[in-house]
Image (cartoon, rainbow, N blue to C red; front, side):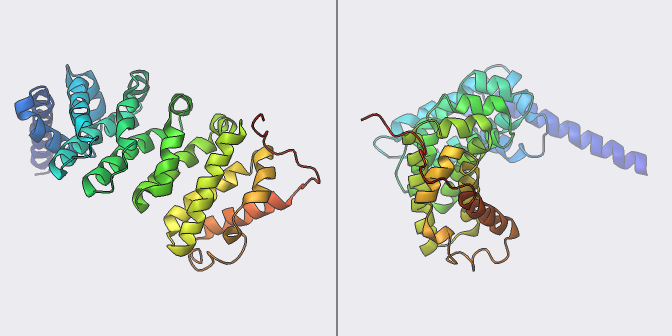
Amino acid sequence: MLATGAAVTTALAQVDREKIYQWINELSSPETRENALLELSKKRESVPDLAPMLWHSCGTIAALLQEIVNIYPSINPPTLTAHQSNRVCNALALLQCVASHPETRSAFLAAHIPLFLYPFLHTVSKTRPFEYLRLTSLGVIGALVKTDEQEVINFLLTTEIIPLCLRIMESGSELSKTVATFILQKILLDDTGLAYICQTYERFSHVAMILGKMVLQLSKEPSARLLKHVVRCYLRLSDNSRAREALRQCLPDQLKDTTFAQVLKDDTTTKRWLAQLVKNLQEGQVTDPRGIPLPAQ
């Protein structure tokens, strides 16, 4: 009986894989692509090797990029419909699958595919289709940084991802802000990323200014999840000696007093980070801090 059950499971799995192959083939044809995108995006969590299958099958990545490029004319002027947004987000979900798989990630970066998503991150329309588009695009970049791979950070630092994230952190929806701040946090946690942001006054001050605005906003509309990422960004910045000197002058008062005590009452991790941040800024103060180099006059 057990053997029969196993055989049935194997047969079902085989049928399922045949369907996957069929849908991948159907991506190449504009007539069958929309349904194939929908079905494959539903299966991306349950098929572990979907990413290599997508990457190595003929014409598939080109078809996904075509879906993305087809949406560009709807960005400016902003005429994107819910149907268009859902369809391109299914394509983005499959690209996220490729971005996060160890076998395909390097090739995905080498092909500079993330750059195709940046026009979506530039959008500012507050309508639901655009919000969903930005959030899904951020999800692809988030999947890349979640891997903690040096090559991912090296690639991102050659692009405009930091200013794009900072803009979304300032004016996006709470969910988009959270993902954008997570991406910045992951860049900062890498030594190269921290050094890059603290290399010039302009870069550091832009990051510090946006984080400061977020703290002010969070004091009015609290979000424990978003606050956690903001605090972690500040704590990481305090690991850099020049940034630490500057933060002594510009760390928001709300992080030093009891403003967030209620929000963080059950969050021991963030409370510990906040205490460590304050401690880092109190230790080793110098009377004549040179700080981060100011721009040339």
